[in-house]
Image (cartoon, rainbow, N blue to C red; front, top):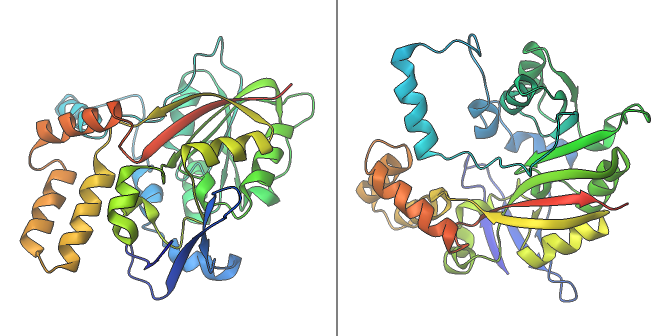
Length: 296
């Protein structure tokens, strides 16, 4: 399909995206092995950094409330959950530094996490959460008498070497009718076709698989889950970052800097918000969340 490289950290190596002619699923080839992939997840990898919590979770200085409101407007919460009758046991796969675990714990959930990064996972543990450090394949199952009612995985499935087996494992750990809420980049989007190797959500080689709406549904069904709903994020970052990559390749540094200032919220916050809402309504943001239930 295309060939690209690590645009996020600039590490060496060329990686192709190939597509199965039978099922249409796209994957990265060659795929780094377990030892070499660690270099592509430095300690300052965005999800690790952005989920850190500092200070008291329940006390927020009045002077910072406007900053929190601005951040929520500029980066709307895309971790949306189906309506659940009551809190129960929840597992977050790829919990990073633990901010979502803390949010759900405050809402009454009994939370656990799995995190590949030792530094990020230790930060989540420092908040008081039970977190397995390592890959999903090495995590112990829960108590058979206390299965999970909810599993969440925000931008995680595309990083896993065997998504079907991972989903089957999660289904086995969940009670009948349990919910799975997860998000992935949408490789069926117009953005992917337009930007190709400059598509921000391609994120080679960290993303092993590249899902469309159809192939994601197929993988979920093979993993023991029934899709209930798909939603598209109201977030313009994929588009803006992809345009920034194009500008950088062409030497348009000033334009790239201007796009970065919009992404960071320093310029054009209303334009950014409007663009995000429009992309979400058109199912064109390149990011989607799926709600699924465990098969009975």
